Amino acid sequence: MTRQGVTQHLDLLEAANLVATVRHGREKLHFLNPVPLQEIYERWIAKFERPRLNALSDLKQRLEKGNDSIDLCLRDRRYPAAGRKSSPTSSPC
Image (tube, rainbow, N blue to C red; front, side, top):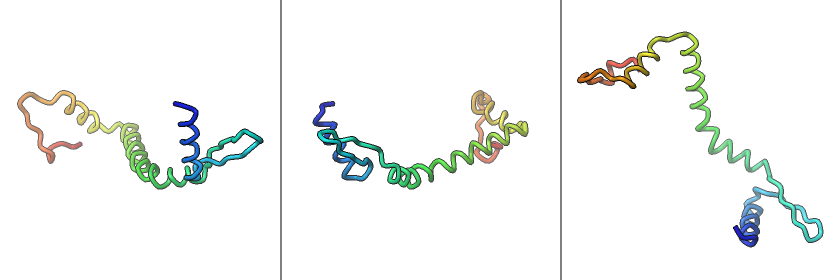
């Protein structure tokens, strides 16, 4: 990437308030602005992360209980019986 390309990109990030700048003579220092990044995280990432974390927590609890139905589900998915058609209602998964 060229120096001019980097400068243009940093100017766009500064205009979007994602970076803050400080001038020291000829130098222009860029720093990440954490406030809008946190807002982006909360708006776009956190809402998708919460259900996955809940699902992983539920799976962990089921595995720690020693729930055999999980083992059956995994086995049936890996090694389905020849000629047997599974219906969505017959599976405990």
